[in-house]
Length: 162
Image (cartoon, rainbow, N blue to C red; front, top):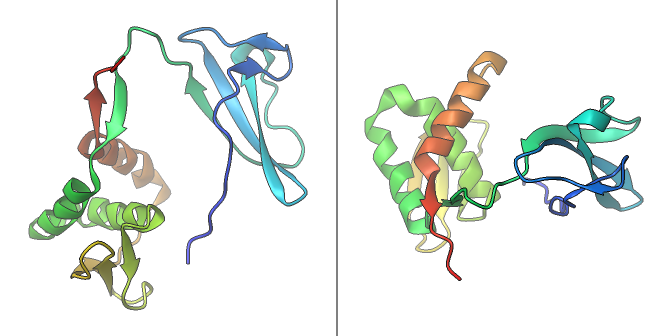
């Protein structure tokens, strides 16, 4: 089973310089262990010296601008339907496999067979139906392209509702 890790949202403050991060500013986020918990520190680009000792993970991001539209994940029913439809496109097997893993992470589907087999059977939590998904290997060089492809498929712009 995939583990659950709780990490706080962006602090909107530079941990080193103790100043707010501005709209559109690039920053780095770092996750560190603190006892049984995880803590997050955000660093402005100017204060970034690389990940601190003991960092579990880090990434680069940009503060949103107030004039930007927010991207939201498609509804669960749409994601499940997309997983089913992608079976008709064998050339998208790697993207489909990543989508299945993401849906497991979101607890929308669960393994119904050994995920280490050549084909994994997953069960849709909402209705109990099953879907066969080919288990594939993904190389490091393919990862970024597949991530961008998934983002294009799964996210759409949302209007800000006041």
